[in-house]
Length: 350
Image (cartoon, rainbow, N blue to C red; front, side, top):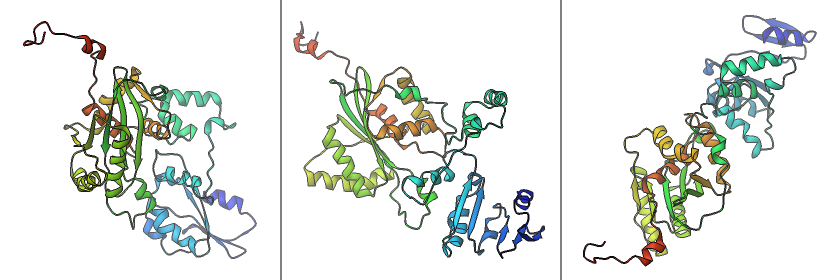
């Protein structure tokens, strides 16, 4: 980069300081080249513009706590360049354009680069494997997933079946105060997830998965509302301190709305989360035993599934959905047969 900048700045560079990586221009401006391996050395330097190269490899707080404040005085700008490394802090920056007009994102794929031999690209595709190839050559942030779920498992979209019974599983997240946390730390926090599934002889029909970060009172209200809307046979909540925090509020809301039920404890049973999710969902989905309601939750669920089991990505929706396996019971007895059944011996029941 040092040689490239000198070449681009030929004619406007007044002085070159090789040892410190500084170029002084004829208009009084300076260009500094610095590394982020020691972030503390970047503090206190006033900047008007900064280019963060290979930002995915930097620590998130380099931008949030060190660089960003130095741009505030002059309303400076920034450019972030890099190769995706899963859904980390770099990925979160690319999503800011959805809510903030000051942010823009551009993607440039190596597979579309006319200066790279197409035969070489094909060789790399075979050598690297699909996930790494998508990251390095297609600028994909999906990394670490694909080993458990694939997109074909989510094409089974359908209407609500007539028969079956609803079950609800709740995977609560933390209720800690989020004040004082930077955006990168907030985005890594888990979300509450409420999975609503109708279960019958056909398998599972995923009616909805409600997610978000709520305080303990709002969480209890959302759980109770889901219960009133779907009238499930069972409602389970992951056992532990988070359930203990929810129950007093949930009990209060039950009395207020005159709606009562006893939540069932959901436990991981000593299984690792990856195994529990895989065993509960993968087989069913491979054999088309799970159908999905075409609602807003589905895109987010697919997104989590494609990244699973990447530790940098959320899996809250998958976790709640997998818990349905603990409480769901399928009735395979024909109701019409029950209506006409008469035992030969009323004592034995045959």
